Length: 292
Image (cartoon, rainbow, N blue to C red):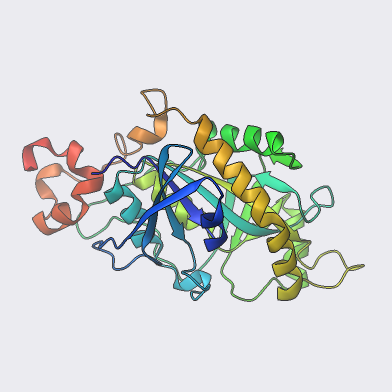
């Protein structure tokens, strides 16, 4: 383990912060394959941080092509305890126009083709995902967003769709009828796996469009999304910098994320295959003291 405690997932534009000193790019090997890109290790206002370009440099990977397990496992191997995620979303509510920010606290899963657990192969684990976002980290995001001058909203439901196509209009109306607030393609798998890895996770959802339910406007397009993304990039940098500065050095004993597996391991410890335990030791080793 290293002394890196904070991880950031987002676009490569996050590396352009004026106060970030890039120290190295580190390739991390995981039992689940390669992460999206090397991790960029740097110091931000004196705090060590690991950045990961979610879609790889140059945005090469579709949402379904992302190796979510490798991305989160890599952060675990680096010693990361908290992950700050930044991502673009569409708004499903009139009150959340493009350019504003939501810090969601719930998800609805509409994906179909993605591995989203580290477990199996002889080790059965059922973590609680009733509250999938770390409340302490989400509050930091919310406060930092307001300090940065962004119209920031605390709480809300994020629909995670498969993509890469945007929604049909019928789907968009359906999600609105459910009371969902924003829609994106990536953050739920990250949240699930971060919880299994006992890493705190929260996401800053940057609104780029109204999806396609708002018929008086043109349906969402890549050009429109990219233009808002460019406008939001510097604001996202500012918010992440403020969150990093306000986080305590260590989580301490108050955060439940740090012990998410304590009551989630179902399999008799003596029955877990050695190969499975060896592969997952960075996640579960402390719960198998007699199998070290």
